[in-house]
Every structure is written in structure tokens, then in C-alpha cells.
Amino acid sequence: MRTALINQPTLRFDAVAGIGPHPREGAVIEAIRAERRKLTIEWDDGIVLETSWRFSGEWHLYRSDVRWQKPMSEARAVIEVDGWVAVCFGPVRIETYRAPDRHRHPQCGGAGPDIRRTDVDIVALVDRMIAYSDSSATVAEVLGDPRVMTGVGNVERSEVLWSVELDPWTEFGELTEDDCETLVDVAQRLATVGPHGLHVYGRVGQRCERCHGTIAMATSGADPRPVYWCPDCQTDPGEGLVLPLNLQRVEPHPVEAMYLNDARAARQRVRIFDDLRELG
Ligand SMILES: [Zn+2]
Image (cartoon, rainbow, N blue to C red):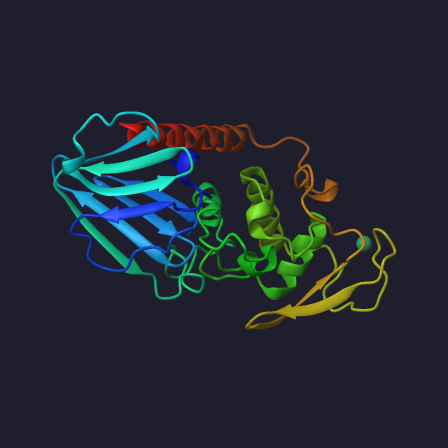
């Protein structure tokens, strides 16, 4: 269902007994979250649709030209995008509402885990980052957002981005899961061990030791904390972020390597399972 609907403009939205605002025509579906007996869909105009059921109730996904498996009269909500129709059947509680300002209030809620703690769950942290609701936020914003993680000070933020040669103003949505893992990994090392000297922080106008470019400084949005970076060697993620040589371990601890691999596989399994379940 995610594959068919996400990033698609809505051609039609109907909800029987749907109380609340509807997404405007053409609004783009941004996120679909499935929990036990509950499915939440979010549009880019801030409308959220929540469907939940107690015993029976389900979402079906059909190609636009295919006959539904249940009569139209039983449909409780219909969302149509180019080529696909998603239909919710069954005794379902349907509610739509306008998320107050979800760019400022990502679904994470509350403060994120402290990355300096040795027992911090890196996998959960990466998940939290991936779930960041505003994919148009910059990586500098996400990295400095205490709702994603705490313990990354402003100094570390600039140094982390320099370490992985990433432009702070890259849209967060351009990062892959692997990129997020690398970011969190580097952030944790710099936050716990501290940076090996300052490469960009506080060095506006000075030369970048990597490429001899000139270090710049800027702030963004409501965040008054300055970001320092080298516009010459910090670019978009391209083929993916690379762990800097000085932070690479000779050999990752086998248990850690196994755990990270397992977590990555589990994430993929969950996603496939979600999709299958949503397909019914
Ligand atoms: Zn540079």
C-alpha cells in the first residue's frame, strides 16, 4: 500500500461518516503507518486520517480498473491515486483531523535518547531518525533536533557533517537508511569521544584542512545556533555517506556487527510484512 500511495497526489477522497476535514484534491500522501488494528495516513496539507477497528476491518488495495472484492456499499473510506484505489472496509472508526503543526511536532514526541549513553539503542535511534516526519527539513535541523536524539551539541553537529562530507542544507529526505546509520554512528563517536580537534566549528573564513576551501557559517530557520561547514567539500550524499577513515574501526566487534545486520534485516522484514498485511 505504501508503494502505491506514498508521494502520490490524491485524486479522490471519500469517507463515510468521516467526521473532520478532508485532504484537498491533489494533496500528496506523505506517510502511512500501520499498527495493530490501526492505520494512519498523512497528507502533505496536514490532514491525518486514522482508521481503527476492534475485530474485523481492513484496507484493500486495488488497481483502478479491477473489481473490488466487497460491495461498494461496505466501503468506509476510499482513497484514489493514479492507477490505484485503497478502500477501507468493515466496522471501522474513522477520524480525520488537521495535525496542528506537525513539522514542529514530529510523531516522535518528547526528547530523543541521549546518544552519549553507552547503552543507547542505536537501532531504535536510527528508526526514530528515519521516521522523522518532515523530509524537507535539512540534515542540520534533524541532527540538531532534540526530539530525534539528545547529546549532540552544536559543536558536534557541525563536526559530524564535516566528517561525513555532507552539506548541512541537504534535504533530510535525500538520505538513505544506510546514510542515517552512518550519521548516527559518527554522531555517537564524536559525542562520546569528542571530535579530534575542531575542523569547522568556530573557524569561519579559515581554510578547510581537507580541501583548502573556505569555511562558512550560517543559521537556519528558528534555530539560532550557527552551523559551520565547508561548501567546497561538503556536498549532497551522492552514492551514500562514507564513514571517515579516522573513525573506521579495524574490525567491528562481531556481536555489534551481527546486531546491526539483524536489525537491518528485521526492518526490511517489518516493511515487507506491513505491505503484505495492508494488501490483505
Ligand atoms: Zn573542504
